[in-house]
Length: 136
Image 1 (spheres, one colour):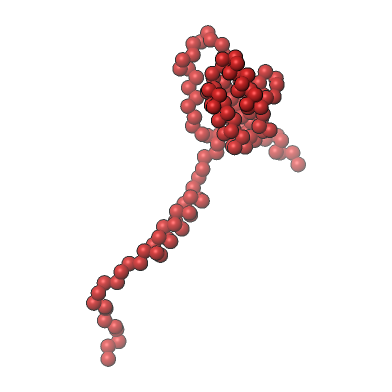
Image 2 (cartoon, one colour):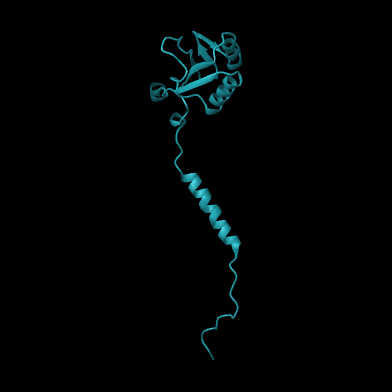
């Protein structure tokens, strides 16, 4: 009586279901643990030197507030209202700075509104105000 069973004559097939499960688990693991860059480090094409001479009028400076409004010339504007005002002045480029606490969806919506109006925004994100978060 043999103590070890002989190997089967035909090769055993490799089942794919457990392998696919392991691949998906690894994929989820690496997606969750990967380091994502903060939005302050997004690389955008902000070349303001092309097509502008040194003696031309400076670009309007807009500031995106956490409320979603844009501050320009000491007045708060909605994105649609300001894009119409800039289009009326034939302004095709602006400098846009965003407060550090502006949500990404408001920033994206504002950029889309300006872009749809034919206005190119050169963006700079300002650092969040640390003094407001330090207070109890």
